[in-house]
Image (cartoon, rainbow, N blue to C red):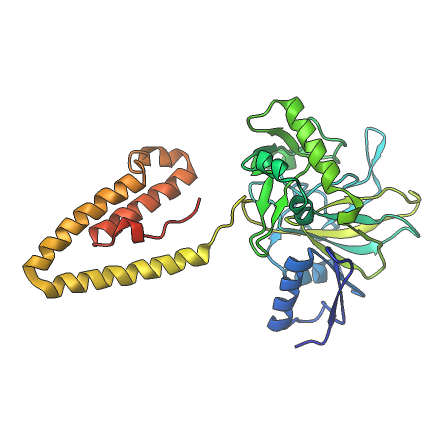
Length: 376
């Protein structure tokens, strides 16, 4: 295992990684340690790196699979997969500073990126810091009444909200055609790795909260943003040459600062990593695999018992199967009747699959109450 250090930068967010040259192969144990640190500290600062664009791309994939950017035309020349941020773009005569208000990246996607990462290529002589705020701690500190109020609420995230506090840079017609439809995500999401709840906010893209009128939705978003962006939740990164910084979009919001001499160039490579569908409550695929294995063992045991006990046992089993099937149908509250709608709704399709699984269990003599059901 490579000898390196991981040093917390605050008591809640950020850790510095020193002693690893990421242009060289990283062993599995080191990679696992870094991924655990990422889930715990939310922002990793890897010091003293020296990347060409393709080296940066290779190093980032230690943490996951690359997610394409919305702006397909916005990339390092000769490297279509590597995007960048800079201070040299203008829209309608105004200089665009990417990310100059607190936000989370690409939240308009059905599966927003789990992580975004930057590598410093050119930096101003001072200023240009990036601020990160811990939205786990922000959620934890909310009054119980506010937690109850926002529990279950979902927001619509468009590419650019009509209420956005700032414009976004130019988007080509081709890139615009390839944008996903607006995403609908919970205001509170649960991190799939560290298990903590977090606020999921982005005023640049949040267009509405389902079930609320716009005035009330904007007021609520404003209150939550004011709470979440307090200094006590912040890690402020002061960039150095050689810094590679990666942050977890499920755990922090971030913003850039235009507080430097704009005659000096600020240019950083940028990549993102694929994420998952934001969920308010955790999803447990491992538990489902265990449930399927347990169901298989019970089915085999039931079949063996019926084969060995003769006609009487088969009669009892038949009665049991009928009761189990009835219990399954009651338990699913008419899932079979909803099956014809599953073709129009993927979630209904999954539920229909679960219904079929329970009925199959009942036919094999396994009680519906013993069947493990996926959580949707």
